[in-house]
Image (cartoon, rainbow, N blue to C red):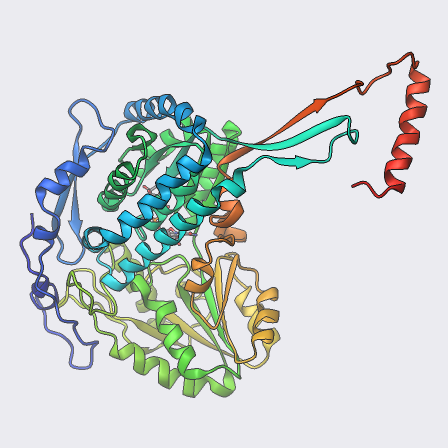
Length: 547
Ligand code: NAD
């Protein structure tokens, strides 16, 4: 276990800070080893369904590159066991009134806020992100817990619908749980994308078999413990760990519904497997999100917003902005403000507030980021700030980077970097900006900056993205948990949040009760007479404006 101090994170790595580089944030003095002790790892790891003598995989703390945890790996047979346990637990849970299930979410909300420091440490240790960005996960999960805790009953209640024959047919639309949800989640927002999505699934009466990314499994396991403390029956949430291409398909193979968050490439595979089994899936996938700075934007606010939009969690955020489209008339001034703010960001990974940006999660993310920037520069792009790794801070740190002069043949132009890199493009007309924003196969998030709010909403209506933020980066739409969030095009299928976010975990069931007479010839009517009566009845219903 690493005993590097958080101060060492900021100062203890080989290499010296470049003179004009981003400043290092103060460390804070706490260590990953003391924040995530072996006893905690062992306790949490006991929550993984892995039988026999499981093989163990080692995870690394991205902040320091040192060993973080040894975690047991599940086999496909363990996945089967997990589904059996979940299936056994689910009917009793589904039989509880919604209000009892929702109460668990509300208790979880309070426990999470109270014990947030524990999970902030875990999120930082597993992802390397700054504490402020880890806190955004607490925020998002608390909002979802409150929303579904309060609104689940309304979403799930039986709804009276018009019957086949007025008065004679009584019809109700009911919502039944799917059963056992297979939930596959990535490493980048390990709290929010794990438990945040599961809260409505539980509220709707389901059990879950969850495969988080192994790198960030401790965070999800901690949330599971907390939800159990809040009243969730333990078997209802099974966790399996393992290689995505091995364990992921096993989860899809047994699930009654699949909820997946990750890359578009893997999402397509998951969708095909689910389709072959005729089970539904929601897919929250990648993006190449654009921010539009219109000519009348408040440039100071837009520059500050762009920093949040591009560099939160070091750009490893699906709704991050990677393309900045700026009206030519304000581009120079905007870039002056934005680049100055970007250069001033304090980088560091102390387990305390104070850093503006943390580390990337892995060498894979660092490699993609470095490749996108280096290739673009070689092909003629200009680095306005950043453009280099910072091994003096930690193995995977990379400076927040602004590129100008990016052209379509460069990978960074159309491919998702998923790192702290943004390319700037200038436009002359709104038409041009909207066309450029819509020019990728993705359609996840976008951001529009203007002083004219009506104009902002009119531009939003023309953007092909699942969420649009006017005068905010991403948090306004994402935090509006009563409204749907998700992607168009290659960014996914289905939505989290709001009614969609919970109803996806249910089957609609129509229950119709027929009274007095059947919908067939009766009361001595022959077929012809029955047809005549019904024809008259249909005409009357239309005339009476029945729907
Ligand atoms: P990934 O697709 O590599 O992995 C996601 C999850 O799928 C992991 O748990 C992984 O182990 C598992 N997996 C891998 N192969 C699998 C397979 N064949 N079958 C089933 N499961 C498999 O994605 P990642 O690199 O972990 O995450 C980053 C990506 O996720 C980015 O593209 C990002 O934009 C996207 N993302 C989207 C959202 C959203 O809400 N739209 C949110 C966060 C991240």
